Image: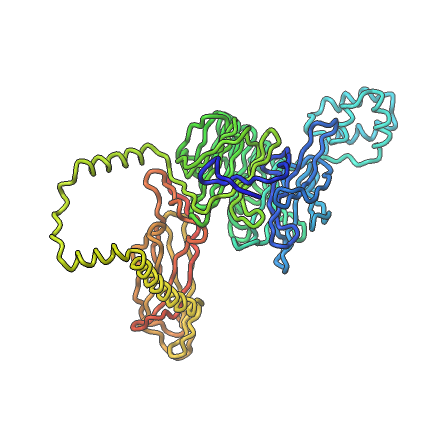
Length: 606
């Protein structure tokens, strides 16, 4: 396998000596999974065939770009997900395939379980018709007319199939299916994963299902029980797009896009209720995502627009696209601290946006119909593209990739700076004359520039390493909620964050666990990244803490937002959204207690 970066400077094309595989699929029918539990992540895709008389689909497993395994599916899937259902070692992923009213689970690529969503109510008239059809052939035409008068979408599949048959085939169909139950089920139209507890590597997850009847279900795959059920909205509507953020045990947000252009938001408290309409647009949606950091909603429409909304439905910004957007994808680049949005346009153009700014783009041979991003094989940042011409392209992100906004504001700023430099700045002070010692030292550095620079870098990194190791050792030795210093009274520290943002209130409770000794001369110190959070008072001296009497102090923490967009900075991620709390004793350098408080996602007050 060889790579070449002829298409775009930030992405490397993956070429192979063998012929590239052909696929007909959608973004929702592609997944990445370590199905063999050997550390090698494989590509799973549903290859949909529409050329035969009866449409069919096959679940294919690729190792790299070579097909290793395939399995015939009993229908056309709506979505495919790879998830873990428990924390037992070694962790084995389970593949979930949503087909019609069922979710098929595969383990080690073998059938594992089949879950069927609850049945819907059947019209009494339809039940009466099927009771009379086998025994009253003379009234068959009148009974069939009764079925035709009912709403087609609310008929069972058996009745729908019967109305499609010719008169010669109806007799045998009625005799064959006379005793089968008359059941009506909704179809699963979208599916995604919701992490159960944390954002650690490979956590157990739940499945979020959206049906064409407007039901939103959450399935717990360990016991295969429904733990959440709600309606998209108060009236009947059909979902088409689904996006989820958060964790099931704490709080989560489910974003549902419908076929008529409505976007609805469901939370954990919406169980057995219905969602809230965020906004509604006149044109159909082609893509819907909720970004993980700033909790904004991005959509692409048939009117060639890329739009960003807040959770309250306010339009933050919109970008006019050059062609029809076909599909969108979120790319979380944790090593850069940013999240990009990839938009595939009609004609083969794929553009990458950082919020409203275009930062990269490349072109493939035909329109991209499906995109998938993540760890594939042994590479962490792999982008897989499948076109409408059934071609598959694989691109790897370069280690030295750069994503810089290509905005006119930056260009104007650079031109202004160049003009100032050309004309000269009269505010710059005159430099003093160089001494002979400085000149001699400069000559020596020029003659031995490489050795001097190398020596300086070695000493600098040694100093940084020593300081960082000492700091980490001091903090890790105190990384607990109870102090372990035997020379002082044992103290316990608890933290609680209140508020929805951007202003939070951090409450700290200090409790003296000793039965006779008093804890005194204590200081609480808070540290946070100034780019993300502002703390007006980062240090507080505590009064003496008596045994059995907890002391509660509070601090005001304000999330930093862009003054124009009202959005958190792009460098804020789930890993660095923390505030470090240290409890120290006066006169000591090592803290008694050190803890990291994870801050919730901020909702800007628009």
